[in-house]
Amino acid sequence: MTVPTTPSPAETPDAADAVAPVDEAPVEQAWSLAEPAPAADSVAASEDIRERVSAQSEVAGDFLNTLDALAVSVGDFRLSIWDVLVVLAIVALVLTLAWLTTRSLNWLLRRFTGFDDTQQLLGRKILTIVVWGMAFFIGIDLLGIDLTALAVFSGAFGLAIGFGLQKTFGNLIAGIILLMDKSIKPGDVIAVADTTGKETFGQIRKIGVRAVSVTTRDQREYLIPNENLMINQVENWSYSSKNVRMQIPVGVSYGADMKKAEELMLEAAKDAPRVLKTPPPTVWMSEYGDSSVNFVIHTWIQDPEEGVGNVRSAVLKRLWWLFKEHGIEIPFPQRDINLRDSEQFERLIEALAQRQAINGGGKG
Image (cartoon, rainbow, N blue to C red; front, top):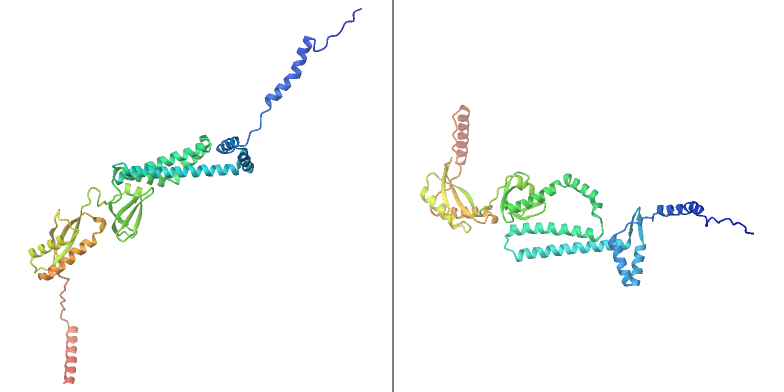
């Protein structure tokens, strides 16, 4: 007699199909929804260096792991002592390389180029900007910082340039333009005015990023913004030529020999060491003054940076002795006083005469 057996759930196709989805679907859904926890961000360069060192030496790797364990986490960002050391090392390395590269390029620019001083200065500024710009991006890349993370910073930086740093960048661009067109260059002599409005002259010593340094004869140094020299009128004594003409006024008496006086003026001008022979000095009669006939001695010099007052002094001192030798008078203002007669004035004269007579009689 055969006893019928009931098939087990595993042997029944329909049951297996019905049970399997119930047992397996939740497991697959649970694994698909489970995501690993995000790791805290840190300096990418420090992680790479630590892994390379650990692969080479276990002892050094343990030491670096100890430094990396001493960390501070802020949100998703993690900063350890090892990260700080790596960042400082990379920054120091990039700054040192940028400084050495700039010095080397400047030396090569001076040594192996035929540029003049102005072109060399412009080249040094451009090379400096390029080198330090490259150093910035190389440092960013070595630190593993994503440039897209700087989008907000670059926007804020651009806004700062538009408001707070507008003048600074304006002066930087103005300095580059001045060097390119050579309207203002180191060594030029320009006229400057102090705070009281008194005008003097000075020599340009340096064109910096923000301002031009101008030194006067009394060793006062003026720092004039580059932008002012570009947009305002500037009196440049040595723009196209360093020859400068000076005017020295001289007055002689009406009774002097005018021809001889002119000859002596020319002689005094020619005897001055810094006065050029070509073009030669000239003497012009300017006007008939109140007490003198006025002349102007025109002389030329080619080194205005050495001063103009000392040249004028040398010519006038030499002329003084020449006039003395030849009897030519240098007049000074004279006034004739005319007193009108009046009753009070006549009484005063009589009183003075009587007093004088009494004093004279007493002495006798």
